[in-house]
Length: 161
Image 1 (cartoon, rainbow, N blue to C red):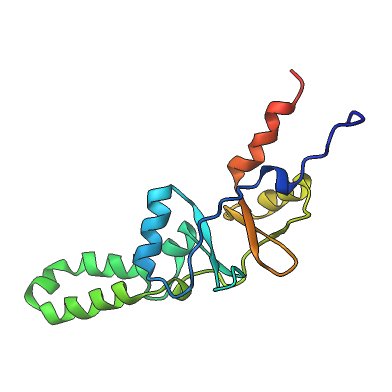
Image 2 (image 1 turned 120 degrees about the vertical axis):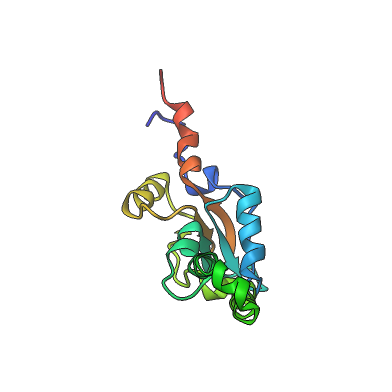
């Protein structure tokens, strides 16, 4: 690296305006936030903005318990039965609409420290292919940003041509 050139860190390229949700928010509402913002995932934080988990598209489609997409699939597959037995439909729909973020979030998400280097961020994405974004936290575990695969590409314009 040429003298005087600053080394790129996670803080330099992370997204600082973080949209997050609390664990008690309804999953349907959180899914709307992901969809409207075209996010792959978002941090789940407590009242003090401390990270308690992450909700990703992967979490929404992969949980094997009767949650979100699997429950929705069950509802769709049984539409004919529901047409005849409305009480069963109401029960399954109530289950689906009462789910909260905490029911499907990843409670032990991968994170990066606010002091992480660019190289550490690149390595994290190499090692964890399904993860996107990665919350960036300070010493108090408060979310100060998120870094996505897109953010990793930001410094590439600095390369000599």
